[in-house]
Image (cartoon, rainbow over all chains, first blue to last red; front, side, top):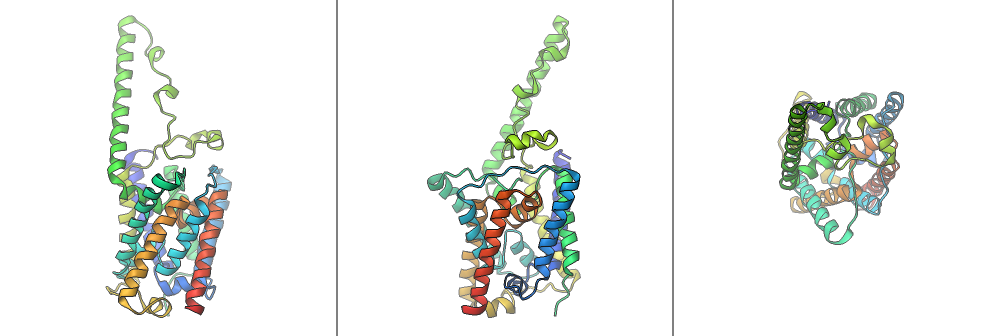
Amino acid sequence: MRTRGGVLGANIIAGLALGYIVCNIGFGDYAELNRMFTFQDLRMLFAFAGAVAIIVVVFAVLGVRRTPGRIHAGVVPGAVLFGTGWAISGGCPAIPIIQVASGYLPALITIAGVGVGMLLCGWANARYFHLDRGSCGL
Amino acid sequence: MNNYWPWWAGAIGLALVTINYTLTTDRSLGVSSAWDRVLHWRSERRLEVLDAQFADDRALVDAFAAATAEQFGTGPGALTLPDAERGDAQAAGQDVGPAAAESAPVASLRPAPLVTQAALLLSILFGGWIAAVAAGRFQLRLDMGNGYRQLVTANPTTMIVVLFVGGVLVGFGTRLAGGCSSGHGLSGCGRLRPVSILATAVFFGTAVVVSFLLWKVI
């Protein structure tokens, strides 16, 4: 499905489903998230790891291509910053949206921070890093 | 204490979303990329206009070729530019390295249109709202819940600063690392991409360390 309308429909369906599922798993709940990261409650960890395991098996069976992906100098420092930000704000890029949808209005500040961080990264990369960062495949 | 889904239901749900999206669009699901493109909507829009212009020019060349062929009695295919010269093989932002070229069916794709990325983000908001309302968890509030108050801060001003700094770190980090928990974590690890497995291990490991610090030390 490569038409504009097709991709738009797929994005709407994926967004609705992702929002519904992530909210029902509990990723928008900071207390649940901290319990996952401190291994006090493995439910959400198993949900994430189980999803990855299912995807690996299904992609292997269906022969979905393994994209190469280059490990560049930004991967590890970027992931360290992301992990720190996720732990203190409770938000990866999708989760603050879920938090706002659940009524946690301060998550709007997290969203503003995400936007500023992305713009900063673009500016810093163009000026200082000059990394060919690529993308996760979108 | 809560009525969240059991782990297996969450795993099946997340897997179905990722697999369905990949199979129907030939693309990977990535929320940080969607954010990035929506934030840079001006330059993205300019690129899309240029792309449309390019497609129009291509159609014009094809029309001229067909008309010329008709005039001089040659088959229209003879004067049509080959695909490679017309730029059909361009796939901006996609993995077009040797490994990708080996698997032709999904190798040449343009990035998803900008409007679809905005629709993804808005749909996540709507889907999350439906879930929260249906489960009876929706409640407008000016704090981040008891867990955040106990583990991070109870001071509203400090909370605003920490959330903003955390958001900046998430935004900066995901763009520097080239993906987030959906792009690297689900789609990338699902495809066994080494870069995604490394990124996921590092961001998850870092979050574990920082969360232990918040829980036990700070």
